[in-house]
Image 1 (cartoon, rainbow, N blue to C red):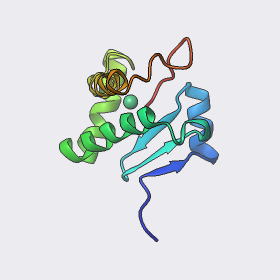
Image 2 (image 1 turned 60 degrees about the vertical axis):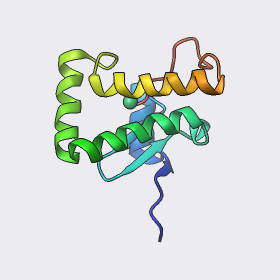
Image 3 (image 1 turned 45 degrees about the horizontal axis):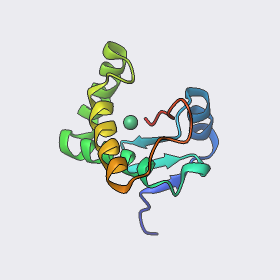
Length: 110
Ligand SMILES: [Zn+2]
């Protein structure tokens, strides 16, 4: 069975995303889980690809430890891994003219 990068979140991962107000999450085993309404969303996919690249660049274990440490130390929006992902996402949004996010509070992506 070919490896799929993007998977629709189900079960506990879906529950976690809903509980944390996120729409997607990249996992150290190289997959990104997205809530169904965002499954085809290009910017959400790009955001998660940035995290998968960060894992390849920094190592999965180091990425995971750092991500959690920075989350505790700086919070979600100031986590350097998130800043990098949201910067790339914003540049792409400007390029493709996708405009504003659909929600007044932009959905978080882990
Ligand atoms: Zn993120």
